Length: 256
Image (cartoon, rainbow, N blue to C red; front, side):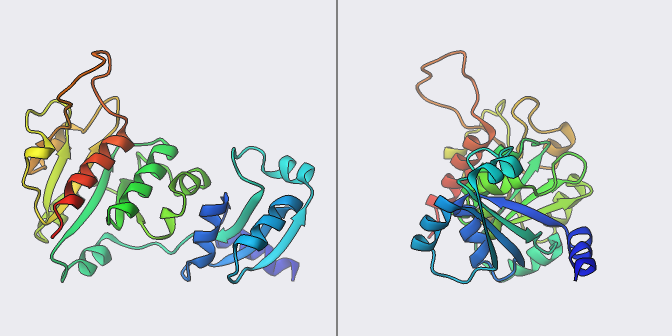
């Protein structure tokens, strides 16, 4: 039994999921294999009152032991789920799934590395109906506990896909009748004036360096988000997750 447990942990990539909303979303996800739910005495009482679904093995430990083992994750709410990483999914699978959809928006992050920003972007993606976030294998973190916590449940419904070459991926997506829109703070064309195509790939760059030049060259449109009333001249751009949310909303509000 001990050998099986070690094999499980070593080869099937267990990840810790923290916080009530993220844990509940993972518990409800049929594609997520769960191993063990760890709770403090206080969080166990609240959890049993609020959640009535199926749970895996439960371990209730003291607050002291919990903090010693999991204190590194802020705002964990005294709840951790040990689970397996979700199965990998290919970009071709995603494209095939959208084949018969009249409207679809995909997200691509170009050198966005901060896990909290990525998690927030996934949360906005889930809210506004984007099912996929594409990142570079070399310039983005693997799915981790911080992303899942920041996504607040969205990591269970939004695909996180790592590809070797973003430009090549853009070119493949274009072949499937998607238009490519890049967020670029230097562009004179604003997103509120753009007739956003029904099927598009929205590409977002890092806050400091933006989109790479080669990425820009492969975009059909480069658009910006500009305020009509600039209150503080020292603030000339939005946080990447906020900018992405606004762009997704512009697409969402034009849905038929």
